[in-house]
Every structure is written in structure tokens, then in C-alpha cells.
Length: 478
Image (tube, rainbow, N blue to C red; front, side, top):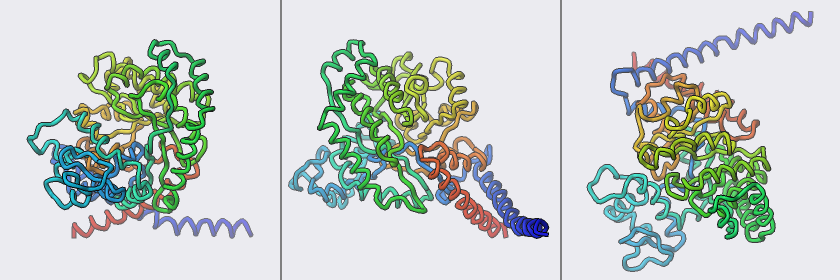
């Protein structure tokens, strides 16, 4: 009798759920048809509608996100005033003095449309293709912006993180994994001399690690970094938004400085669960970055052996033909994966030039090593877009990838804009862009419990979104 009652209750529950499931499936099908009409092959993409669609669409995470490059220049000008600094009216650099003749407050800059326009052309990519003034090459324009706002980039971080959270929620973005603040650093002249002579080994890495363990200033900086993360992350995580951090090394510094930064990054990632991975940044094509690339990968390999649970999301292959000699394009992605042990690749632009690219992509497919695709910055810095972009290869050969912003404040863009670019250029179907949203959580470095929480929340958000699109579409057809 009891078994019969249970069976009847189960059957009733299934019957009740059937109409809801049917409605959800109908909404998803309607959303598929609606999206297909926006990117119909052979027709001009409907960009305004795509912008609205992707602003509304739930976007799981932004996994390649530089904190300082994500803050818009207007916010940095607010911080100039908070810190009592000023902006040189001629050079547009920040001076750590009070406003005076020829050095303006941030508010004065904001109030002068001409000065503001000139500043934005230096502090971001704005208007680069819209004016005829003498310009540096696009890659220099991009990387030079950081020197302008760096004097205030590490100030007011609580305000900065809160602003990024508000902006993310506004565009229905649930998670950011931000590359946050330079990792603690130290230098050893003897190590540098040996490294530049090509003679360092694991024994040298171990010896330098031991020295760093005894360096009180260095250890103090690690402690200060941890306190910083605790301060800026207070009250950030909630039902609508989650934030995690990656410390980073600068790849164009002296070898011992890079090793010290990588070593401190690994320690940080094992000291606080909000620090979920480590990274290395900086223009990959400059001389020191190219000269020491293989050495840096050996550093990661040594420390990954020591801290096997730490995840790596390494900038690798952010290069194009002509930026460096051809042989420089042949191994960066491969070494990031096979030597350093990267779990994700940032940019991955030179894959077509790498030695045996099919084998590398098969390995990435098999090991589920995702590529962080940054369409706007790849276009601006490298001049690579449309069918020349290797995302076309990653799509074809089943390499996982996600869409991300890189430096939204510098590019004057957001993640919704990256989805619009992707859809307009490559005409994916709705299932593909929906999968990209989910994959940005699946390939995140979040703890499993947080990952499952965000994936479940994404289910509900997509159900609501698809119901809205289906309803609006039905009304439009009446």
C-alpha cells in the first residue's frame, strides 16, 4: 500500500512538472529562432538587437580580466582628486602634487571637453581610429596607457571593486576572475647574472626560494597582499555576484624579480581561497619577454611541482607575424601547457604558427585546457580579427574557449560587447553562445561548491531570460 502511495505521489509530481518543462523548452526554442534571425547568414547582423540581446543574456564569468585595465579613466580622475594629485595639462601624466597652473584636478579635466578628449586618447584606446593626430603603433598605444593611470591604480581599491561589481550586475555578469595587483617582488643579483648566462637549474630556483623565505620585507609584502584582498573583498560576494583574484608577475623584469613574483603568487594562492590562480603579464613581444620566455616556463614548472594544486592561467601566444622573428611564434602556447602546466591560456593567438599546432590543439581538447579569447584587444593590439582570428581554429578542432574582456576600461568595452563581436563575426547559433556562458563558469578556477552554485543560478537566470525573449517575440509578431 505504501509503495502504491509513493508511486502515485511520484507520478503526480512528474505530471505537475511536465507543463513547466514544456514551457521552458518552448521558450528556449523561441529564443533560438529569435537569435538566428539576428545573425542570419548572408545578411547584415542586427547589431542594435544583438547588443540588447547580449546585455540581457546571463553571462557566467569574465575569466581574463585585468583589474587596473578594467577601471575607466573617468573613475581614475575621481581618484586623482581623492588622493590630492593633479593631471599635467601638457603630458597628461599624474603628478603627486596639488593642482596648480598647468596641473589640473580630475574634476577640472572632466569639465573641459577638449582636455578630457585628449586625456582619453592617452589613457585608453578611445578615438584611435577617429582622428588624424600623430600616433604610436596600436600595441604601444595599448600598453602605454597603464603608465598614465598607474599612480592611482592601486588606490581606492574598495571603490574600484564595488564599481566593477555594479557594472557586472548591470550587464548580467555573475563572476569575475580578476588579475589583481602585482605580486610581491625581490631581486638577487647573483641569480640574475647566472640566469642571463643561461646557467640556472632547479637547484638555483631552490636556493633563491630559500633566500626569499628569509627575506622579511618580501614576506611582509605577502602578508600585506593578503590583507588587501580581505579588505577589498569584504561584502562583494552575494547571490548576484562572485569575485576571485589572481596575483601576477611582470614578464619584462629581471629574472630574479620574475621568479620572486611567481613564487609569492603561488604562496598567496595557497593562503587564501579567494586567490584562485596565478598569472604572468606584460607585452609578450618586447625583448626581455621573448628572451626569458623559456626560463619563465621553467620557473612555473619548478613551483608547480612544489605547489601542485595551484592553477595557472598564463598569457601565452599574444603575438602576430611580424611582431617578432618567425621562430618566436613557434612554442609559447606549447611550453605554457607542457612545461609550465597551465590550466588555461590567455589569448593563444599564435597557435597557427606553433610547431605541430594540431597536436597542441588535440592536447588542449583532451586535457580541457581552455583559451581566454579577447576579441577587442586582439583586434587592436595585433590587428587580428574576423577569419584571421584563431578562434576559428579552436572552434573547428574542439578546443574549449571562453569570451573575456582583457582590459575593458582601456578598450572602452564590456563583456556584452565581446559577445556582440563574436556573434556578428562568426554567426554562431544560440546553443553555442549559451554554452560559452556556462563554460565561463565550468573553466573558472572557482572551488567546486561555488562553481555548482553559480551553474545552478545560471539555470534560473536563463529560464527567466528565455521567457522574456519568447514573450517579447510573441508580442512583436501580433
